[in-house]
Length: 269
Image (tube, rainbow, N blue to C red):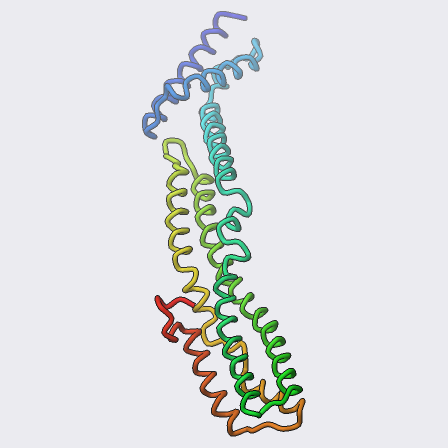
């Protein structure tokens, strides 16, 4: 290895170090933080140069430093995304809004309307409008309506829960987006997204009952006019005038109950 070769290599390496220092300073980065990795990249480049190369200094291009910084940035992005994956593991949102999170509210709404419907049918029986056969048929219809109503209520409640879960995954997605766009010199704070999650979660959990109630508002799960008709058909007679007055009153009560206007303390179901 000739002296001229050695001098050319050292000159090229020193020039690259100076350019790297100036470039990092302009970007607001501390050269000392990356000096070790840059030095190893320069050494690796030197070992690949043919000792007989007439221009060894030409190998020490800015790409060497750019590649070092790019790998460092990518390693940090990878590290950040791993931390995000541990904090916001796939399906994490389901832990906060489980499938049965709305059951109590749905049961309350269905239970209230079912009791109204059952009381209505019982009054009809007590007034002689329904005999045992008619009463049994009407009660059987209540069971059918409850099953259908529960399916509808569950679907509406699930939509609320899924919307809430999406709000939580939005927080995780924002964290992933920031981590994926991270550049050297920036600060990535996963704790910021923890705080966003907690704030979002607190609001959603606090409004869950009202949101489910709003989704069920106006739903008449028990069509009281149909009950007496079913009972009457089974026994062969029904009083339509009495049915109409009772049905209208009960429909109004159901509608008010679903809107929280039934006088229940605190506006709850």
